[in-house]
Image 1: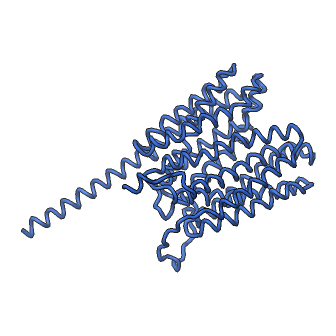
Image 2: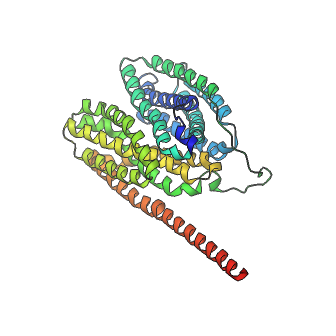
Image 3: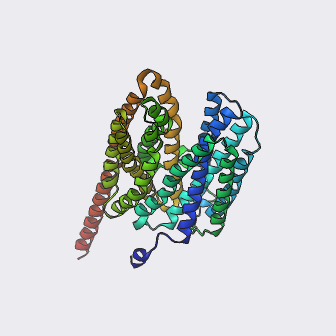
Length: 416
């Protein structure tokens, strides 16, 4: 206990994994924003082809998470980081030379695969680096890497794309990947001793790729990803529609600033009091964010929605990631982390298309009210699949302990 109190989260290894995750996410955001305009203005792609080039990245990331998430707990994480970072460099380098839509789609697909592998490795590494009693605040700090990249990446890309400097976007990405490669070489991650199951042949099961113990969390995370995807997809066009372009452009900057300060605090609450005291209020904050967004008519309401989005989505996702890792056995922390991101990726991947089908009929405002209702539904799911299940588990454990003690006590009386 004394060692864990003295443990400094911001050690060399944690900083290295923070940098790696920041870089791969930064490159993801820069390339995603830039590739759409690049496809349309340079390659003369249609809107649908540009959308396919963007969406194929998520498919690549999802496929790699499914496979590598199932084996990440049994392989050398440092080697995976070095190799996947090197491979991530190749398709991003190819952006400078491609000249057709098909080449862009192929480059985006492989970039998604290597991003997914490296992201799996980073999640597994941070789960091993941070002690269990500091996991909430540790994941909170780690999540800031994504928050910063989600603010800096789109800002840089939008600015440079506005100047038609696509090459500079890709060169910045390549330079930062080199920084991630250095960090992956410097990092040290402990390896767990494997159980002697090498010779046991496993039959195919979906649970080889999805961690069963965190399915309840995954359903909630899917809802969060699905609704946040609606913000990413429609906030720009919604802001133009309302003549609030300036307010809409700083939405994610405000989101990032609030998240940087709120996530470590929510992490400490998670560690000291419990997950429910963070996740339940966070989901309610996210509902408020959508309710405000649905009726926004001035810049202040847009800013307020961004603040509630950070307190809601930002805190809920990092806390649910911590909870997923906490619920899983230590040998399956990597798989639990992969399951978390699979749910998030699928939610964010399908929502722009599905909600985009009904947006022309119902409008952006009603789309965001639907999202508010989905988050309320996720709160019910969290209670039914996580809180109640946890209470039942604790009750069963207590009953078992009581029966065990009573049995032993009876045996002692008989012997006497």
